[in-house]
Each structure stands twice: as structure tokens, then as C-alpha cells.
Image (tube, rainbow, N blue to C red; front, top):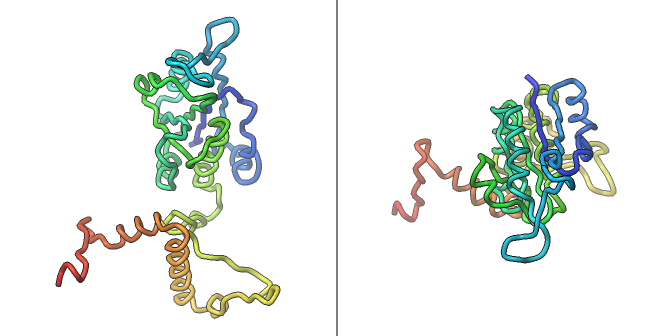
Length: 248
């Protein structure tokens, strides 16, 4: 089944963009996924194809109109009623690997790309739209964020990465950052590959990789480490285990 991506945007020429190359591009050519950029201006009703207006209450910039966006969203939902509708906004929930996996297992996705100061709040009150953010920074528009989301999803589609296990040990799949990688030459500028990776002992290699993943996560992403530790310290029933101090 083809994973169908609809992108509501003022700049449809940005798609597929980088998604037309490498693994995503090959998958697009093979029909594993489809890319359908939709021009939001096509749903404007005035002669100027206006999609924005001045903010209520005053202020800088312009705001995308709810009526125009709603017509675009309604059209997309008619074309693909089973696909979730996501809006790429800086105030949305963080894009996580868990959310990527959730989207990638579905029939596709409709992505609404914002511009200007944002979108009329009434749109989110009136339509089932999930707001998603790729990070704590501001972009010129939602298109770049949509490309990030789609790239993350496409690589998980069956057959795109080749072996089904290719991404199992990558960063965030287990809640940890990925362990460091090495390849030939064995000696480069006086730096050698860790001996354990040349030992041929698969159990020791697996233990080293796990230890490195934990060390890197604890030092570089304490937020991830805290969540990982919380999950690790839960019993199968979900109850938090008591510490030795509490049991004493």
C-alpha cells in the first residue's frame, strides 16, 4: 500500500525537494509513497487569491485566514479521510520517534504548512488538526519542517532501508542516543578503533555499545536519560520501583 503524503502549502514547488533523492527518492519512484503538494491559494475566493490578513488586536505581520485554510483542509480530508492532519507549528507537540512510527504505520498524512505570524486559532478549534513542532526554534515556514517529518516517516516504510532491522539501534529508537561508530582504517591520525570492536566477541561488543549509548545520553541529553531511567526503573506492571533508601 502506498503511503500518501498531502502537503498544504503556499510553495508547492518545494516538494518533493530533497525527498526526491536518495532512499526517499527511490521509494517515491517505486511507488512506496506519493507526494501531492496542494496550493493553499487555490482555496481563496477573492481575485487576489488572498490567504492572510492583519492580526486582530493589532501587531506585526499577517495571519493566515481560517476560512481559506479550512477549505484546503476539508478538501484534503475528502481526498484522504483516514490520514491524520498535522500542522507544523513551533507551539506544537515535539516530533518524536514514537510519533514518527505512529504516522509511518498509517495510510499517509496531510501536512499543513504555516507562514507569516501563524494561523487563525479558530481553525484548530473547528478541525481535527494535530500541531507538531520539530524543535524550539523558528523557521520561515512549515515546509522545511514537513520535509523533516516526511523523511523520518519514509525511511521506516517497508523496504525503504533494505533490512527491516536497519534502524533498530539508531538514536531515539530505544530512548537512548546511538553508540559511536568506527570503520577502517584501524589507525587514523594516531587514533585507533576500540579493541573490543575488533575482538569478535559479539556479547562484549553488544555490552560496550549499550554502555556507550547510556554514557552519551547521560552526558549529552540529560532529559532523555531521565526519561529512560524512569522507564527502566518501572516494574512490568508499570509501578515505580522503590529505591533502596525507601525500602530501608
